Length: 110
Length: 137
Image (cartoon, rainbow over all chains, first blue to last red; front, top):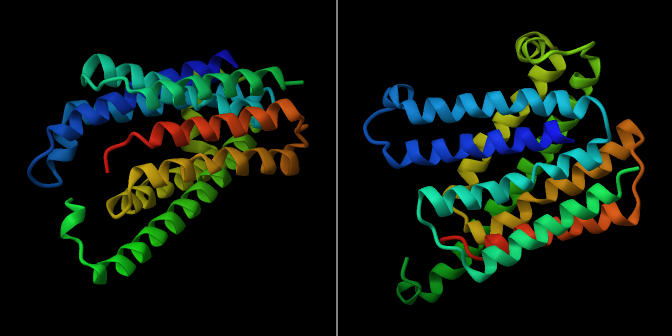
């Protein structure tokens, strides 16, 4: 379970770098491969799947897969810190619901 | 986009675009769920995995390769769907994948479902929908 959560954390960092890299995108397709932020984003995504696969080896997928939704929470935090996106009422409400859902799914694990 | 500029004649076309986007995202969630099942099947075949051997398995384990290929295909289709869809509509549809994965896990891996798990999944789907309501159009 902790491995899956670690995977979702790393994956959200990857998404953050993809966003940072995508913002700087201009020119042709070849720049896609020269953009270090995008490259780092992809590397984080690949890196995040290692703990994820290790994590889902043991345990029920119906419990572990919903835990990935925690990456939405991390994404909101990164968006707030690095892209200065504001927390709105809907975002906070959605965040709380997702956390509550993860808690329920976790409690239902038996 | 200014909605005031949209004439009545463009409305049906927009609705058709929207349902095309939603249909595409539903296909994405199905592909993603199938990918998850393959990844789990692949993970199950790993014997005494270490982080490094797991990383290598991404290139050698056919089940993991197939699972992540589906995942990549899903991502490409999803980007196409996003091009002519509103994120606020598509977000809740994306979280359908939690429902598919739960169902498929029962079928393939004999996971047990209970009301707490179901409540959790419904709550997460609702949460994602609420998040998406705020997204830029």
